[in-house]
Length: 506
Ligand code: HEM
Image (cartoon, rainbow, N blue to C red; front, side, top):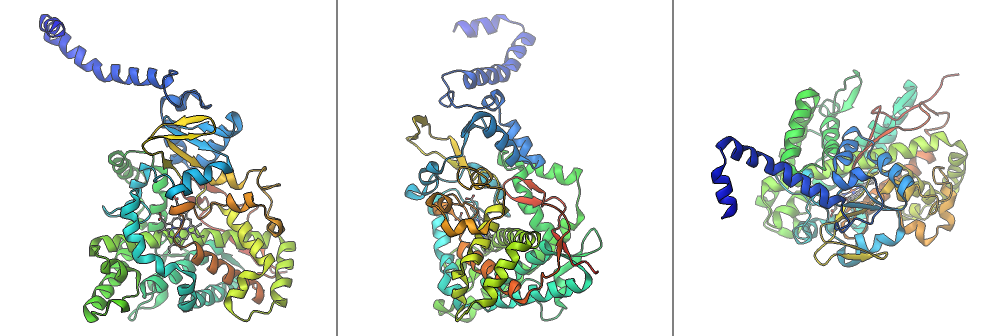
């Protein structure tokens, strides 16, 4: 009443002034609370700014050095750092089980919503475990190692094309192995999962469909621009979805890239074709046990054609750059380290391989693949999870519900405490791997939400490396750059867009 009377006594401009001040008062109170000892994360070391606002995190993700930013904070403040108002990052093998594995781990943090596709939450972006589970159940059998072995032809065919492509480029003196590996990955995965290889067409030349002119004038995989665009979601993903959309539009307006539109159309047309074939298949045969492709399985499980379209695109995005970058880096490391290459070649040349699974038993090859996976960091930053109702007690501290907790790949994989001489490429370290080394490899994620295609990807990496080294295509090659420079947000991106190797002509 007193306030009402006071307001009533004031002139209307004074009233307006008071109302205009309310948001500022609200923000000021919020900042004071965040800075005070009343905030539940008050005792956690970190920069003052991170207690007030998430803007530094948003900024470093946007400019592509989030991994370096988080690393610098750990160097300064120790293994447990408050990196944002509600966010804490750990370098501690002990957090892996409670955050990612125990009872399915904490759910994915809200930022994953920004990875939705065409208005649909995907198997990757869903934060609700039950909704994700219903979709994953339909497709997971396709990723079992037994089924991959049974249906391995798309993989062996794409490996053969990858090797043929490298031989061709060797003749010309240089190869961008990143682009070759991306192409190999998208072909293998789409043919295996969708039954129609990306880029294949009955009425057009494969290479016309697959390759669009890159900006340098060199042919570039036609899906590259749309894949790059999708993985760059991580640059803005800390924004709330409405602001994300706005920022994304503004970004496209300020930095227009016409090749994204061309590439998006090509990929959409391809996925339309995949979906139409799956729908025709479901019409043709009512025998549901014969429905064996990824889209058929999702349709069978009751999901709408428009969602299945989005789920297919999600897989293309998830597969192309991750395998592309990992395989590209692996080849780069082998070329850069001739001693490792020679040891591997000796093992591969003398091996007796009766069946393809024997390849994964080769110990030095195993070390090479694990070491390349460790050093690549296709997802180099944190995999954030949100503490659920009831909070989480860990290391003598209480983290209330809503706290975003994480471990970051770059911190774990480059920790000197876990991997001595962590920056070096040392396949032999895996001959006597400690439990901690095995536990802290998080390239494929961890726990219940780890990569559905982990076994498939490793299977490909082992087989391709084996064939590549056996036929000695890399003989005489050199790296064209000393190291691979990356933008680091949720997904890594090679700054130059290429991992080049050359075969010098003497
Ligand atoms: C070297 C290759 C690959 C790497 C390094 C990789 C990495 C990852 C990582 C780190 C995650 C977990 C992300 C998180 O927790 O936030 C993930 C999830 C996922 N990946 Fe991969 N991935 C690879 C290949 C693939 C391929 C080939 C496919 C599809 C054919 C794929 C499909 C997925 C999907 C659908 C998820 C979401 C799983 C879920 O949340 O339930 N990935 N991947």
